[in-house]
Length: 105
Image (cartoon, rainbow, N blue to C red):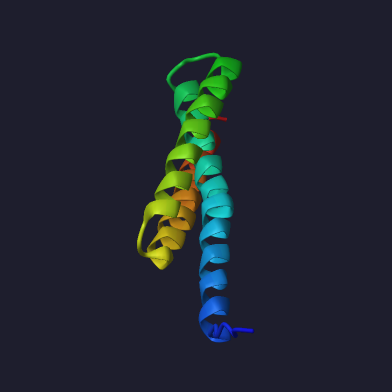
């Protein structure tokens, strides 16, 4: 019978990194896409497009943005930077959309 020696701390650290990367891709990507949808919808509505058409176009572009940032988060080397970019950009786009919507009302 042969014994395989694994380092429990290395395995746990590796699993934690994979879990953090997956959470960043899913949750951070969602925050980024939410901001993109809100901002695109507000910009298109402010440009004179009908609200429902602007909302549909924003949702389409948000889906593409989600796919792009999801893949980027999986591929990037620096996970901390990915978290920071996704959350900060999502918050900034959401804030800008909210400011634009309040100016339109």
